Every structure is written in C-alpha cells, then in structure tokens.
Length: 429
Image (cartoon, rainbow, N blue to C red):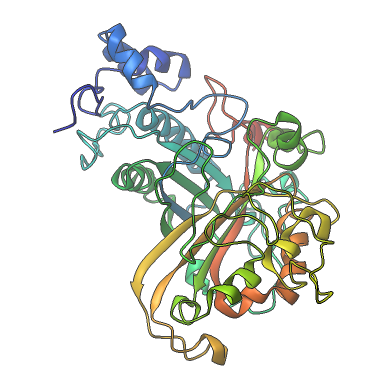
C-alpha cells in the first residue's frame, strides 16, 4: 500500500489523459482523454510533484534533475520495412507518454498486449524516457535500410578504439536506445519492458544495463562506488547559455536534431578489490580531490575552482599531472565540456577476467560506473576529452570499459508528433 497522500499508478489510471488528447496518436489518446476527465484537482496537484514533462523542446531525462535509478537498453532493428519502423516509433511515443503520466499501456493501443502490471500501485517516481538513434538506423552492412542514410548526422560516428578498451560485442552498439530514469527501480524496468515487448517483430534487445545513485539532497553531489563525488564540474542545468553551448544541438543540425543531443554510454567496470587496498592519500592523488569533502586538492570546498597551477613546497603540482580531474578539466581540453549523468551499477560477481591486463586480473565484483554523458557533438566532447584521459589518467589502472554506444537523441517531441517524426519527414520513403 502506498503511503497516505502519495499518488500511485492505480490511483492515476483515470488520471493523465486531459493532456493526452493533444497527443493526436489515435484511439489510445482518445481513451486517455475520456478517462482523464474524471481526475480531480487535488490529485492533479499531487501528481504534478512526481511527473516530469514529456512534451517539449528537449527530451526528458537529459536536463531533468537526476532520478535515483535507470534501466537503459539498446535494441537492434530486425524488420526491413520502413512502415514497421514508423509504426513502432508512433506506438513508443504514445506508450512512453502514458507511462510517464502514471498510466498503464492502454488496451485499445495494443489489444493483444495489455500492460504487464508489475508497476501497478507504484508511484510515478518522476519517470522519464529518452530515445536515441544509432548509426545502424541509417545504414548497415553498406545498405540504406529505411531510406534515411542521407539524414545521418556527421557527428554520429563510430567511437574510436581507445587504449585499454575490453568491449564485449553483446554489450556494445545498437540501432535504437531508450533510457528510463525514475526514483523507483521497478518503474524504470517496467517502462523499458513495455517498450521492448511492443517492438516484437520489429526490434529486439541487444543489451540492457541497470544503474543507481545514492540518495542525495538539493545541491548535493552523488558519490560513485570508489567513494568520490561525481558530476561536481558539470554545466548547470540552470545555465541556459552553457547548455546551449555544450549540450543542445543547434543550427549545425541536421534540422531534426535541433534541440537534441548526443549520448555516450560506457559500462566501466571498477577493480574495487584493488582500489580498496590503496591508501587514502593515493586515492586522493589519483582523483585530484579530497575524498570526504570533494574539494580539489589544496582547497576546502567541493565547488572551489581547480587551481591547476598550484605547486607544493616540493615544487610538484598540488593536483598531479596524471590526476583524473586535471585531465578531464576544460582547461586541459581546449574548453571542451560534457554533461555527465552517470549511475553506479552492481551486477554481482564475475571472475572471468583472464584476458584483461595483469593489474585487472583477480577482480571479483562486476560493479562500477554506467557512464552517461550528453553533448552537442561527441567529436568535440567525449571523444576529445577521453582521448586525453585514456593516455595518462592514473585512474585507468582501476577501470575497464566493457560496453556502451553512441546515439543521436532527437529534439523534444511536440504534442501531436512522434519521436523521430521530423527525421522521417526529412527523408520521404
């Protein structure tokens, strides 16, 4: 039973479609509108505290204040038919809106596939769904699959092979991505589960990854599994100029990507067993920050600026040349910045690390960081920064990248549109 005053999906089955009628997505939208007329004002006030906007200039789940859980998946398209792809994107849009508003998948949208029901009674939990398109949507094996090849953005490239990568094919790539974020893990999983089953015959799962962050309050930065704060130097979601400069795609387009962003996922396994044996001073030198406060070495407060020129009494830099924060800093990368939205993951234990470098062997926990970052252009964002870090970062001896991908996340969805509609219309079949 939900706590008193806490809106649930059961309580909101009648709720959200006053907004849905404007979606213009067929009988599902009409059904939601009919049911939504029964909603009372006080319930609206309550649910608005838990609902993140779905329609808008940008997709939700990017500049949204971070939720505590994610379930992220990549899918491969298996149908060669353009009409199947369009129908999938339409159904995904209608279904994603319904779920983000606290409703189950509507029976009249998919008569043979009613909602699986495992999220019934759970809070909406600020669910967001963020969709991305991989390079395989545009061309695969040299072929123009859906007549979209000419619309592939120049920025949607194959990520280079970085030193130290141990990418597992089954955990890498994909034609479509969907990231569900919510303050309840089952709500996030339920959302991806519904979208995946609705894709049957058109797309199939390639990989999926759960993630979590510890509870934290306003203006607090979460910690990763190494115990250090993560996201301290992020551009602020309240700084519109910084978000425009570093996160949102602008006039460089293509047009269907304006207001969108490029997401890089990286599944990074941490050698926690080795890390836990390291002295605190070594750990802080590796990161370039104090572990407890999060402050840069030589400073007091977490958000104090990095002083990369400061030297100690011995003449050596206070923040070592190989420190993680130095190599990731904009000053070390010609001003480049990315918007980091990472989650920790813990997938149990896995002893199969024989093929890895000697200093990574013997680790047990299959745990680490599900790194997620958004940027205006990955070539001047993640790739530029990481090519610098992968060569010198002291942290590299404790982490191994095992999977992920790069996806183009279109701009936000207007009422009456479906995700990717502007892309489809730019390349008539």
